[in-house]
Image (tube, rainbow, N blue to C red; front, side, top):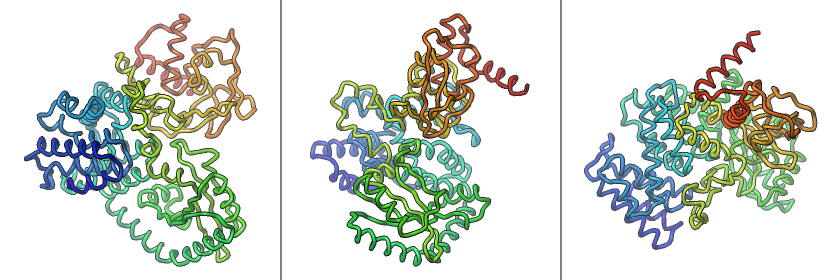
Length: 514
């Protein structure tokens, strides 16, 4: 990657002043990294330029791209944070500092089998850096992709470590940010180093399968195009081939039988609005026999990371099974670029709130985990112990969407209980919870919620939290609020977070063994 290609791409997005600032940042970084080489033998500046190019491609704001160019200067050269602030402004310096802290936190990741930092200090740096501005992790994703692309220069043991960490930390984080294209890039690059024989085997398998079915699929595509034109529907249509790693994961679920995988290649139809999505779905079902169990409406009920689309699998008259994905242009942009497509930082920079919260307040449901991360970071700053297992549940687990009766959407980890919902709505709602209705039916305190549930909390003013409730909450947020209330009522002694967690686990084990 060179300076010319980065500036050429930047011209599509920025005005002359911003381009001048970017050119200045590149010159400054080149000077500071002068004489430094990567293991491949290339000049070091090729790396920050590649990071900046990815950030430009994702449509990020100018400060993020500047920080991408400068992200290694404080850690790897004699540049100081004050220099960055004086030359490029407080926001850029803030981002560079955040990336530096995440890099320092990664130094604590010593084990191949554990994907969280090994010390509270490193974990604090990671969480605090990310929680204060999510663009920090977006820069790290760009950094990680280029490191994976140049991984062949590393020793084999280092290749495995970086690849595993990428698959277990950075790919899920990209997915949580809705950045599907980035997640897929990371997974493919990492899987190639972790399981090279399996990667080559599956790649060949895909190629053989596609060779047999592409012509048949072309006929289906032509028929659909003709029918949509006949019906006067504006559309774009293209094919999507399943990634090698996605196929690997899917085969694990079907005992290795590729004949049970119907979406190896799918046809994607992009239309102007939601109404047309449903109209196209109806047209497809009038043309072909739908497999009812495989109709998914992710528009009405989005995936936890915000992904929206209609999915349907049909059987053609020639008995070919074909999957279709139907979405709007906006949905497609989000599916590809996620947070980078939906957050417009340059529009928020003038607001006072932007200065430190960095646009993370009033987040949509699929991004509420960022707020939860802020809460964890605050607890760490206050010196409280947080277990790795607890963080794994709250920050890296699968997520569900649940709704209030008014239609407000809330994001919770899979396995969350009704009290988790009550406390995320408001700590007073949790405090006075008396019973729950889920989808109109009375719901037990210990029965998990599911994606799409409508949850009503029935409160009573005289109802108070009980010690037993500690066994009926799973999220860090609910545990924290509940313990505070119990201590205030004198029901629970003030103990450290770590001691409380150990005690709670012991209590659960005893009750489960009875």
